[in-house]
Figure 1 (cartoon, helix red, strand yellow):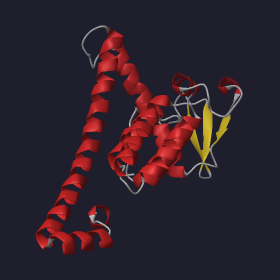
Figure 2 (figure 1 turned 90 degrees about the vertical axis):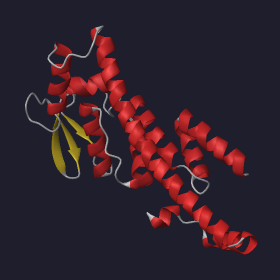
Figure 3 (figure 1 turned 180 degrees about the horizontal axis):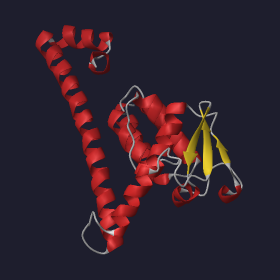
Figure 4 (figure 1 turned 30 degrees about the vertical axis):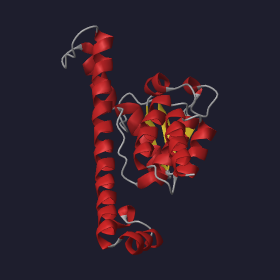
Length: 214
């Protein structure tokens, strides 16, 4: 964590010699505080996603969320089918393994899975994908949940894959996480990626950072 929040040595030295040790120390404290705020932002985004999921469920039922209702039970059943053979009618090849999947779940998320017809395909070949990214995509498809545990590189790869499969909701979720970690060091590369993918939330945020510092 220390490497993420420390200023470049040259900048720190500049502040130290120009303004003194107290000001330099204050800047480091602000950097630490900013890092903590970013962590809290990610937590709030996850909480917000959970609330949005419950709200969508409530809207679909035209009433309050009822955990014993048909729709709630259906969502739980779908979530429980992740990588399960029960009702499976298609396989996903990933990292040399065959993962059980379900056409009706995949088709509910997208019609773009790299095959001409999902309902005539027996196998989706994801051998070219990073295994962690592929599993994250499948987990989200079934459960609407993502574990952003492996840094910006993982999130960028996940967003690119989601964009390829036209999983717009997952793209937006990745954008929000990347916005929390955007800074003057990575904003240009993130802006470029956002432009290529049409990720407008991330694009606008990085554009603001670029305008403020250059």
